[in-house]
Image (tube, rainbow, N blue to C red; front, side, top):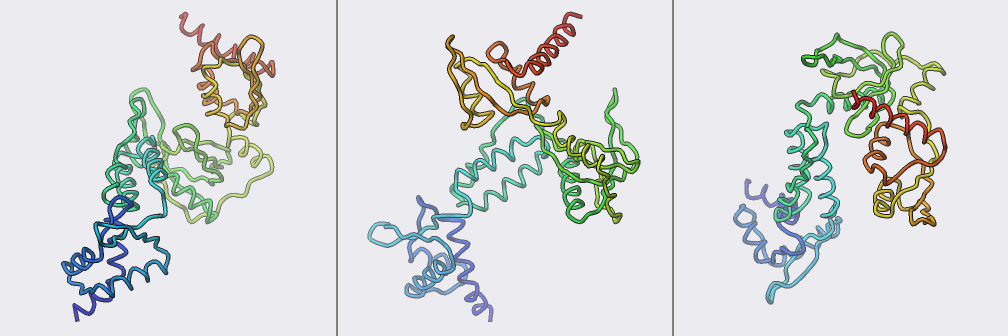
Length: 320
């Protein structure tokens, strides 16, 4: 009976073999398949192997035929994710600040199962971002998961909100809130919610511990609360239309920031200018000031004044 049971598993085993052991540079012949299956206690013959490969192709596997010497060899070609897509996903996981090292490694191991065992090690190339500290715990990950589940099921969430003190971060009391938005900004997740005392709040997810979905229904928002909450999705309010003037050497950085569909004009003095849409958040100011004198806001005038005020405050701070 055991042998018969193994025979029923043959197609599933073959699918896994093609997933794990083959790619365009590593094909296996029919005889190799027969030998591998035999080692696993599954009887196979040349004719049935070819029929089985055809069956796997019929159900959607992209198994291609190539040559290995004088014999036909087979490999799985197109997969759910391409090599480039998997590398991007692995880099994002490795560089994510809100994930712990343990959780990042677990995610990358799962991504490795989506390619061949020969290519899997490349996903552990880990993009190192020296200035980026990984989260020491999974509070952020769990809070985001709980908030998204609560929003979907129209429930409140309960959590402990930690407070940053001079010595160390202290745990606050158990808090109940109605979440409405989850926002990813920079390196942090934020939960936009209505607290028990009807305060519209923007809470950093990594400061919310022991987060769980409550049995309580979410509190309905008033029109004013809904308006304030939508503004908190982007802390600086609505988007602004800006005109930037910048040096040619950072043209690529401007395209990277605002996309290649913006219209860039060359000025008479050799500089460039472009009209862009930007949120006047700390993330934007940090990006702008990082280039020093190589870029400036020239319109609208009030935004240029804001930039000047921020620089002046920093200058006064360091004068002290």
